Image (cartoon, rainbow, N blue to C red; front, side, top):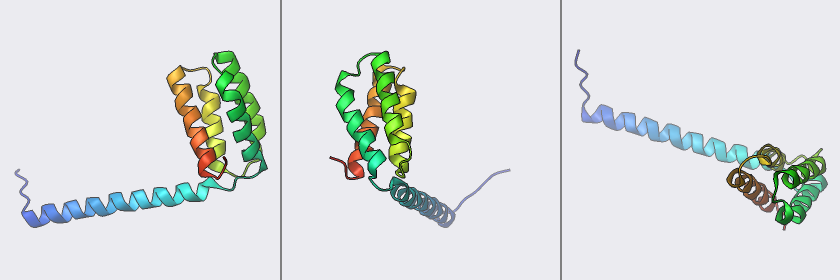
Length: 117
């Protein structure tokens, strides 16, 4: 059984793949923008608390304490992205420094993207 494709079939197949990938990228972008939500009071407090405590959070114990504080601050926020990043910070608090820094950077970026400064 030999599968033989001509140039036209290959071009059509490639075009379909490109259209699907573009559609997925656009859908994800729209979903990310919708999920961002406002920079409401709980999100602002969480961002402030994290920024204030991050420089001192070097050990697992101080990271966990900061994650707990930030998590309490973020309770009730309508900003899904910040809430998700706060959870990620909590999950990574006891992990390696690389994982903690990555989660911290993502939370900081989510705060800035929402308009926090």
